[in-house]
Image (cartoon, rainbow, N blue to C red; front, side, top):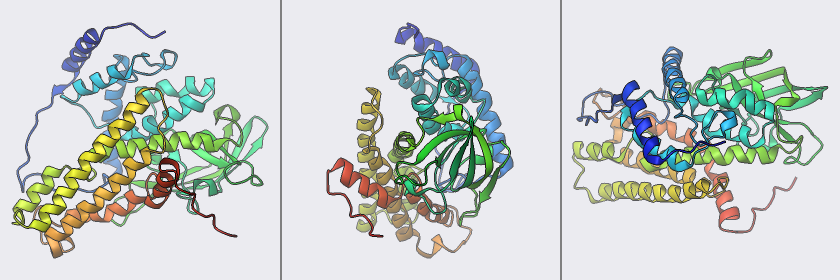
Length: 408
């Protein structure tokens, strides 16, 4: 049963917890030429750096959960407090005033996998994983894309064959963020090769440390390895770890995908360009003596305007989710808007820097932008390619005729 607490008492207890366990955030304005000039789309850290960050994040997640400020809206029986989203928003606003560890390692597990387990998992799986995920004891990853089935998820070929009370999984997944740090993964498999491609899929929760699971890093053209490929060689999964009904995995997948696009588009669109804000762009334009160039000013204005519109569009979608509805195809708009604005950022940077974007002269704030430009193509693929998202928006939001099927 959900507890009864006033918002004022909740805010007081949250503030007391944070004051006792974290330092107030000190806003510092970085001057041009000082500190790191890195603006890469994806964090590119060594394995040791990732593990150190995860250790710090895990400690904070456990402390926050034990104090009752982690899964504030979650069902009480699985470790939540059963409070409304207003309480979650209030807590997030208060925590934002304090310096706390980065929690990016848990983003996919809590933003995509946990909601799917809650919606489609068995009672056993919910009890086994949800509390541990939200407490930070375990990390989750998403195992959907394959070398021959990226945005066309229904064409995946990783197979699961039933063997009594277990399923034997064989195949390969690719572009899996955080697989090397994860204890569990949500995997989509083909369980009926004779059914239409959307009808023969089944989802499971897989132990990432089970016999037969192999994780290999994927090196990007930026030099980092933010993704993995994962191989499954006759990996056994108990039937109790199935998500939803057999051969009804497409519904399960849609739950995950809509939450994924909500997380990607909603969490980043307001920034206009990934992990950096517009102030950095403004300072770049000024420093390079382009502040009075009308074409550059127009490019910069387009980035700011589209970023602001994306924020408002995302707020509309979040309001829908707040009423208890699942994220819909509208969430594709947020993700598509993000990559479109990142392209505008790349075009602006190229216009301002010219050859300094591709030739490292050692000048601060110039060549570092090459990692942003090189990382953009990956973002156009993550969470569904731009082309797939345009089809979704056209067909499911605007009601346009479906794209003709390929004749075989």
